[in-house]
Amino acid sequence: METLYERYQKQLKSALMKELGTKNPFQVPRITKVCVNVGMGSYLQRLGSKDFSFVEENVKRLTGQKPIVRKSRKSVSNFKLREGQPVGMSVTLRGKRAYNFIDKLIHVVYPRVRDFRGVATNIFDESGNCSLGFSDHTVFPETVLPEDSRRIHGVQVTIAFSGSDKAHNQKLLAAFGFPFKKQQ
Image (tube, rainbow, N blue to C red; front, side, top):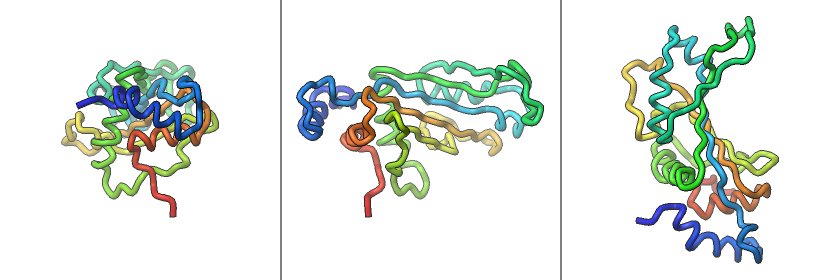
């Protein structure tokens, strides 16, 4: 079975060139990176401990890479935040790993989301990048369902494209089979 990256190179790139009316293959949008982020500030407060190895192991299983732990730069008393305290984790996927992660999102993760009716088309920002969020990490098949319901955390995914045109990037994701909501 060919991967999404191979399908993009062989079939979708030329089809998108015709659909978008571009003559140069380098004008066709492509995925440059996928950033996966997990915020741990309120998660650690709710859990009542400072052990975040569970979250680190989940992110490692989701992406296939060890995450970078992000720490706070300064203290904020209203948020019970101290300087140097871990507040999040992030992983950046590039190349074939990014395409494989998007393939997993389309064909495995979204069908597992309860009452899923499609992704809204307003997920693109000014520079054409796409941001998605999952409030429950258990929709990913690699995670083991925790026995303790307090150990569920969210996952944010940002897809960065080579082009900055929202419409072209949306057509690229639609060609991949991304489940957008139908226009009424």
